[in-house]
View (cartoon, rainbow, N blue to C red):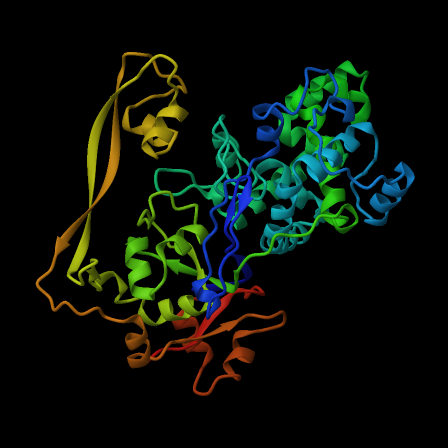
Length: 485
């Protein structure tokens, strides 16, 4: 099954600098994302921009000399915020001003790059937020959390564009194991974030408190409310919150303002190449990125950048189909060759054919002082939950001196006695015409769809798409309406 999404951004971004992609003949040769952008936590706590003060305000920010921001009166900035018409109370005050200065001056290049990345991420966020009836401005939380980097991982083990820790990700239905980390799947992690937002709003009834709880957890927010005499006004409970959270909400407001009024502050987006359209295909067999790249004539890095949730650079066979995002033309090509792709030989640099054998190697690791499950998991690129399962660990603590068994997945080349001539995916496409697909629109029925395609019946649609007799069609669902010959 294939599902369509718009605009996949494939720019080249580096922390502190940006590399402009060279023009290409087609969007299918666009450069991959290399995003190692620093989040708010890095900005504040690793680079020393904050002094030791109880509140986070303009006076707390330690700036070196640089280009001054335009001096706008406070009333004008507040009027701009009000003009956004947000359900979230956006208030301009000294705390917010400090972060407008931070993102608008000291981190101006970072903001410019995030403006460019937003061309990809924001349409995805907005569609999912709108589907969940949530304020669209919540999309700016991902800017504060990860600087719009789906590969971002914090020192505490939080991962993805929304920086979920393991337990919260699992709580909201994200698959996290040695092969897949859906915290890094932009679509699924955004839906999980929406579920958190809604549950938190049901608890507090105030969006600024929802945002605060996203950073420090409801326990800390509840304690701050009690210490403030029951007030549910963020600015009244701010001094009782953890230090980072005191700046987190003002940072969100500042980012919301700057991303909407960047031009007035002399900030322009750093542009990059992108795939104009991608499709989500369902793969129900084990395929390495190397196999996919060879069969589809696609760069492995492109596949990984579109699918950072596959941590072993392969689509695992762990029960059920997995969604893989591909450029539109390559997704259509995959639909043509899906049944034979696993048996296609690979070719090395000299054109010699081989296949990949995937083996599991067990290693023993002696726990050292200072180790924890997360640090060991990162060392071997596996998940903490798998380490616990492999070693029958019931708690989240490991004792120094204990030996742990780690399962590592190794890829080995086995050379084949075949002609040294690659099978071109384009030749296969010419020899085997693709199947035809139809995207369900509002009001569509199996009968109305069958009338649009010659020789197609309701029974054939059910057969080709494994549909039950009483199955309801939902807009956006993709149906096969003709088989390839």
